Length: 406
Ligand code: SF4
Image (cartoon, rainbow, N blue to C red; front, side, top):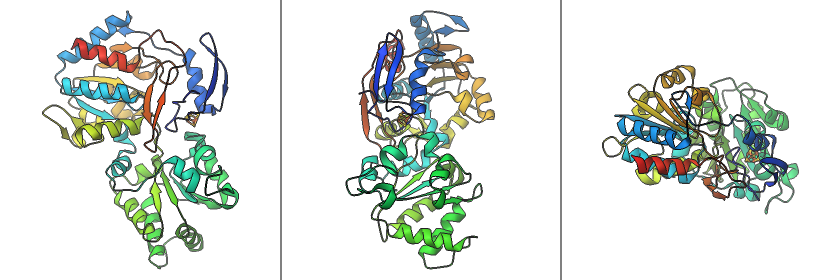
């Protein structure tokens, strides 16, 4: 069985047959995972230094030289790298006294942080399949972002204690600003809110839990939802990017709702982490420094908003990018600031970031050409072996060589 690294579900039931370097047949992959496997033969990157194609060793040596000379490097990305590569990245950050940050810094870091610190209760996806009878998808669209979430773990499957599945044993709500594919599946339990309306909805939910009349248009629907939520044997909230952005800096409201619900029943939270190993980086950095992201090794270990990718770009003189494509994914202003900094990028594919990088180091595609391990969105460790050889080294091997050369 192979593992798919197309999203943070890390599906480990993938069957693949290979014909040379071509994926001949696959079983159990969703359309997104299939795209990941198909990318094996499309848009692969080549080693480059200052726009010229070079041998991979030359690209690695040039990267080591640039990192050695940098005064304030930023090491950014990591969410699509294995735990082994991330560990090397943290070691490199220590050695070069760099700032290290990952994509959670601008998405779900706050929620992951609360979970890792034990401030929000959590459980595994296997617990959800077996016992999760009341679910809230909040500010997310699992049908599109994690296509097998509802079928493998959360809504559709039969579980140990939920033998009659979603038809009778499970209830799921979706809270979102738009009618997504998931909204169509959960049509009767779709609560549409206006952009930024999440905190108000939480206040309304808390009011009903306190026996008060909520300040919402559809009071009846709100009261009926809370009645169902209170009946849960095990409830799970899945916050997506929509909720994370809307509640930024006010995450105590989510905490308040969960602890209020937990006065009468049991609710857990599993954030809908996008990249396949963002959770892994957060856990690793936390274990080493006590912080999940935004760390500077400039003078011991320091942490704070000034070390987020957004702020660090104002003062760093070099960026090493691994396991992400920030020029495509960061807001335009930040991407522009990053493009002004000399960049070294490790990536299996050509991306907008590799196009703007001073040094490009192609790497093997993890899960397909490179093995390793990663933490699923619920923190469960998944190991994987390569299913074919690559002409290029893994992220971990490249980072090890850079470390040796510095
Ligand atoms: S749901 Fe995610 S991990 Fe599973 S097959 Fe699809 S992309 Fe891959």
